[in-house]
Image 1 (spheres, rainbow, N blue to C red):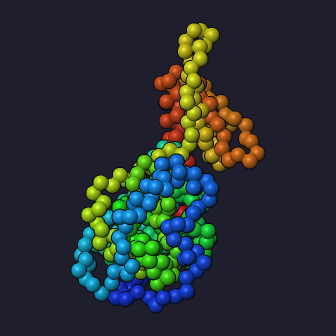
Image 2: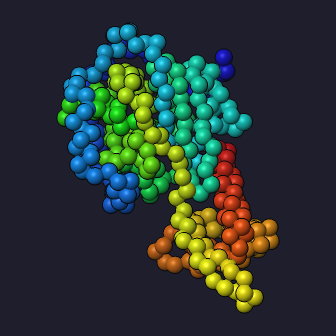
Length: 356
């Protein structure tokens, strides 16, 4: 077994903790709304109030939580998908894979993190194994996040749903991706189960109102201390196993670029050849890295792709700048790929730098 990197010893309790007074954020349920920006993101994925009501009619009407004393599903296998940012992924992997390897060895689970999609800050952590083993693995990953300073994001789905800030070195957040077909068994009748999980284990648990774009998954945000998250995850796993067969036709979320590309326009150059123009928006804090020292990096992109690239001036109040790319369609695509590649390298460099 790999030597442990963690000092947390999770105890196998047969009963939930005594009900404690929930924090202010614990009163939130699936009806909790996020900021206007996040709400707009939800609406863009096309979930109407009528479809939400139809889904709710099929929800599990159970009001009680599964018992940890019941061992009938103790050997059941479960697969978790957790949304993480590129920087969080770096912390969870660790230098030379040390963190994720240690967690795999200690918990006897399978765990991996998806590759970074160009233009996206999102990656997917997958954890598979027996239900209590996965709860322990996820709690170790939560501890790795708790011990690291992680950047906050202002857009769905990386934006924090809870308004309660995390306490440094004490509380952290896990973003579970849950098939909508399993949400009923997790929420319970009139939110009874989700409220009990929050109250019994002193965590905040909020579900997004809408699906993640292009999928049938919803985001379930858990916020709390590592030991409390472990206890809650053991119960959550038992809830999900009850309705495991319903996930068969689930369409899973795939991270995609969050940087806008405007529609290309065509113009005729002085030599009569047709030129294309495309625009891409990048965050302000990435522009310097994409330009490079004395413009060396952007000049390299221009030279390799054969495209002309112009960069807009910073505008007060806006957190992004526009790169306008002009040339043949082939040169534009090559320039885009190079820019995204350089951005990915910079994000990885920053993630690694935070670990030291």
